[in-house]
Image: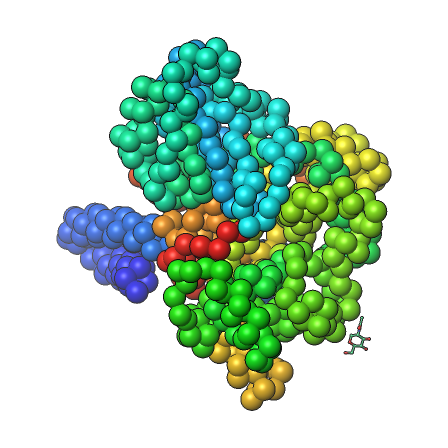
Length: 601
Ligand SMILES: *[C@@H]1O[C@H](CO)[C@@H](O)[C@H](O)[C@H]1NC(C)=O
Ligand SMILES: *[C@@H]1O[C@H](CO)[C@@H](O)[C@H](O)[C@H]1NC(C)=O
Ligand SMILES: *[C@@H]1O[C@H](CO)[C@@H](O)[C@H](O)[C@H]1NC(C)=O
Ligand SMILES: *[C@@H]1O[C@H](CO)[C@@H](O)[C@H](O)[C@H]1NC(C)=O
Ligand SMILES: *[C@@H]1O[C@H](CO)[C@@H](O)[C@H](O)[C@H]1NC(C)=O
């Protein structure tokens, strides 16, 4: 590829330098001037090509793997931890030029947001709603959750999310109120104007189409609000998205506490655990149009459910499978995990709703991984108050999956996408190394004890603020397009061959920070603007002290923002300032997400 060529070209130039130098030494007096000129020219040329090379790098892969990778792709992967994660951290601080929130009295009006879909789809709606309010200089009214979705949950925002925390955390960015003041309501002669903006609308659309109405009517409601804002926004708005999604949206205390209890129960049994998110509900399977091996019974049952959607096109199950559109079966997920190297004594947390076929469908996965747990098995009585509320149950699964050491999904639904992005951004409590705990003045034992016996969330927040430089744990997503043919041909190969092929299919799908590229997929899934690379001198210090020493917190202004559209020039320079021996092996491509999930999840 052209980058490689440029590199080689630079190397050739360097060799040329070298031979020229030696040529010079033969006849120092008469040649020196000419040599000087030539070296100067060559220097200019190599400088120039260097810049071209870096520009090409910039466009072809934004994330450069800092460490030397040796033979690159053939390197074994650590299934529990990304070794590159320590070179990156989540960064979503406000830029100095980001103006403060428009106060309620000066705002252009009140923006009501009615989200849509399941919990995670609603999360994207809430996040984008905050950004839309920011674009419009509107006062945001705490978003309304969807009570009529497929998931049928009556919970309001304040039953799921800590509403005061939400308002407070975003106070500098957007003014948020719990309701439209009565005075405003009384002064309106018509009910609030209701509109639905098209999917992925640009900020310009909001300014052209929504703002005039907002100014005229003072209160506007945007309905079915999910993915209604373009994925690609300017850098500061992307960072705002991260502040909403990863910091301002936290679950209510009862949800967090029970979630942490489940996590602790898993951790008591095993040092590491894998969370598997299975979407295998009958509706979902029917919607997919795939065949899952259940014979005529399945064809009939799923066919009946399919009639619910009048507009679904006729699909060929084979074709869908080849296109990677079919969720993996629990058995296939198990085979994939074993092939990737998870042993049969691995502890599995399985997050799922209703499984089509029930126990029978799960049995092969249980056989591959006998240490198999669900929230129902771990929680017992404490789960009772949550049972009538699908979103609160989904929130519990979200927490346990988020905190897991490795997270695997069988689908590419909203929860999978949101958690994949979050896990790249966030630290997980379990990954806090002992030196970090020591640095808080408490002995690591004491602090661990605090966390174990009393889930005190202010501690967690303190840790969060301080430790978000800590990297992430694995999120493994099946490369369904390539795995599907492999699963079909599995009977024709021995286990070792299968294992090798699965590993090779999964390269680029293992949740490495550098799998992210702009323009690829949805921002909630690939929050590239909020993933920064640590400066090399910080990393040097880190390895010198063997990650034992936390006194090396690097100053915020010395970081390289790899995701920025702006100031590209200076970033390139800082990249150059890093060691030029950074390896630029292109990473294998991630899957394309050309079409939107229609199924509400
Ligand atoms: C929002 O406020 C900022 C600063 O106060 C201003 O520059 C911008 O033009 C305003 N935008 C709209 C849509 O009112
Ligand atoms: C795992 O497999 C080994 C044989 O490969 C078997 O001896 C062992 O009992 C299994 N462990 C569990 C927990 O099933
Ligand atoms: C790191 O700290 C542990 C104790 O917390 C100590 O045993 C170990 O030797 C330290 N390692 C280095 C490289 O300083
Ligand atoms: C941590 O590193 C600093 C200098 O980088 C050193 O002064 C300090 O003694 C180290 N602390 C520990 C506990 O190793
Ligand atoms: C870059 O790293 C290589 C080895 O990893 C080293 O030989 C070289 O001197 C370094 N260059 C700079 C500019 O730090």
